[in-house]
Length: 248
Image 1 (tube, one colour):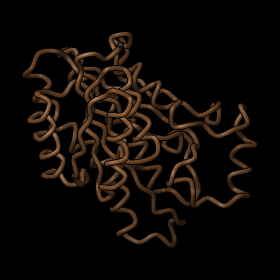
Image 2: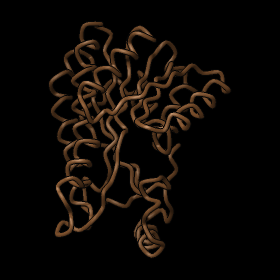
Image 3: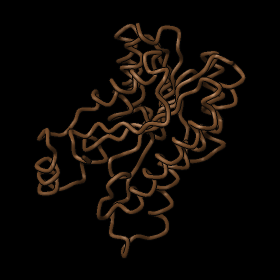
Image 4: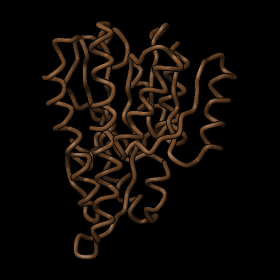
């Protein structure tokens, strides 16, 4: 399998795209740490699904928007599995509203959860990866909204655009250590984050998408597994859109 012997940590992995990523990494041979913030029951379901398919996984609670929690997550994963080869920064949230109506808490919550968490987890994992001298893979989940913007999502767009810049900069910093850093920009998928969109808005998005449909979480997961594998060893600093052509 593509990832035999590898250890992966996926943040925000108890549902949606994060769950699909964790399950596909495990299906390809990785031992997976499933991070969750508050929904322990959902994380338990993910672990059970992975184990039922013959994989190995553990669940670790942590609020990755806080550095001390993110650092604890990294330390606990290494304690349980010995090392970390693959970090997938997937944790995310929205607080959608027009800027005129947006309060400071709505801004800070989204920036902390979506962007600061990437800093926190990367900061905590890079030194152990470098010290191990076996290379590594960091994959950050951004969004096409970070590329094209979206009304009512200035906070979300800023956080996701920030991830793209962060990805390119970190890729330049640690490429010499054989650690690649890439981003994936999903379009619109049926997840909890898009469930709040009304039917008219969803129809408009689908009509504007050349492939004429929403994506599936598994379609993001397949790309994560590829980027995590040796087959993607010469790809770094890239942002790969999985959006059915939406942001062309």
